[in-house]
Image (cartoon, rainbow, N blue to C red; front, side, top):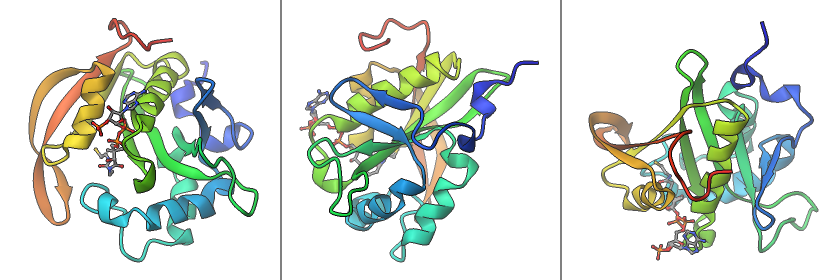
Length: 201
Ligand SMILES: CC(C)(COP(=O)(O)OP(=O)(O)OC[C@H]1O[C@@H](n2cnc3c(N)ncnc32)[C@H](O)[C@@H]1OP(=O)(O)O)[C@@H](O)C(=O)NCCC(=O)NCCS
């Protein structure tokens, strides 16, 4: 049987492949070459990340990035390369955030999509455009039929991305998220491969 690309470990391809791009933005599959810039991006954004990303702890350091990069959770995670400063002083890729497809199901051909940005690059549409590229990857490369987006009802910035993508609102998930020791209700949005979305490739 042909292996479903959704199940392929991230080590199977060359380190940065695939690269997703619309000509302006570039997203590289996360790999160890991103670890230092990824760590720096998280550390300068902790105030904004901590309420919604359970892994964003005060002691976040390089070991946390390496653990993420080498975990199954990173199989379809992409480092958004900072369009304003694509390389660091050390000559490595400068990471402005991470967007990724989580937990793809081969049986039901669905997954969810997630994102975060370095705080100093918010407000420019980078997450919205990056999400379009990653969703196209999910539909076209992973063969997904459905991509879900859910976020705490206390996260209007993330909800606005789902709205800007044109995802359909499907309802309220009671107590779906545990964040900072407290249950949060979540909004559920979804996009189908067959939906008429203006940015679909
Ligand atoms: C969620 C998060 C990624 C949203 O970031 P963001 O900067 O608001 O999102 P975008 O990059 O899409 O930028 C949106 C803004 O750019 C504007 N914009 C500019 N050009 C744009 C374009 N080409 N396309 C879309 N929006 C554009 C939008 O109008 C919007 O402006 P506004 O903030 O004044 O309403 C960010 O707040 C974050 O990282 N939060 C912490 C982590 C988190 O909550 N993750 C999600 C968990 S569910």
